Image (cartoon, rainbow, N blue to C red; front, side, top):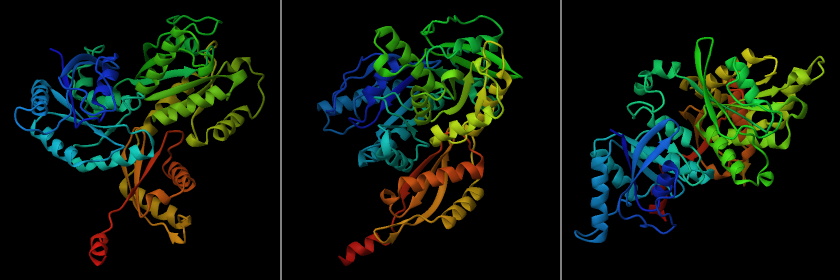
Length: 459
């Protein structure tokens, strides 16, 4: 029997957009006006190797008995009764509303697993709204943008423990219960991406020890994202070979557009992304764009400089690669970089170890006591600048999640903290807790002022 998920929430938070994204078709009408969806709509959804039945519902709203609004509410209640779990969607850009809080209680009374989804989380305003959603008491919010397809990897991680078993790995019972031991031993999802003809398929064939994937000197041989199972020194990996990514202006054929979309989807579902460059044409503009995309998606990144056998060997080349990577990609300073040759098999072991190390860093949680000691030292050595003659106060920091490491800094005026100071905190965090290369997220949140109500009385 299929596992059923009901998408619920107040009107106009993006439920139908999420429904369309998960079923892979525009089955539900989407518009900026609230209340477009009235009846519940069902569809077969898929997210990576998970499949389920989805129910799109009308926005939870109250109305007089017998009215259209009330009947829409009844349809939603029926959907909740049929569902095995609920996707409770809020609008992160709008922040929490009284309706969100009321219907969070409604979702809790359903006595079913609830996944809190903070939709429209792209941008600074979305981050703030997502942090507010902790007040609902429904656990960690999954930050996504259903319209742009961002954050689907995190949604996959939230849903996977709820489903009885993955579709393609039915024999692996450990994946269903998601114990710590299962998480530590399950296959690491790795996407190999890069420009056309960088040697991605050749490298994976070398890793497998067989000609599993088609290769050709002609660019664009790979069209679909192909998944292969790899075991390396007792650790399992699920490696996705992807189509080459060219600049958008050069993509003309519809088939190539679909291939590129498939490659981008593989990046979003991956845990570690290997950016493969041609050693003869490294750190070109498109390489930097791909690396920036991976960082924005919050995935661990490893750079493989392939076709190293075609380069004339000189002393100091690896050190120069390291310097070039830090120069061109300051937002992920310290990203692992490995010289490889898929044709000759050089650097395979070093790259697989780098993937495993990057995965460990991506999952790292910093002890609270050590985090507080670092924060006190970092802000005392380099205090935040004064703005309009007033000193900014940074009160304390906490880690909200890993995958990637994400932190919230509570302060007096969040909008006044300059980007340069945030970069300083990120780089200081990397150095203090050995977080090289992985995306690090720092969100600013204003601490509630306990004297605000007294000021209102005086005025």
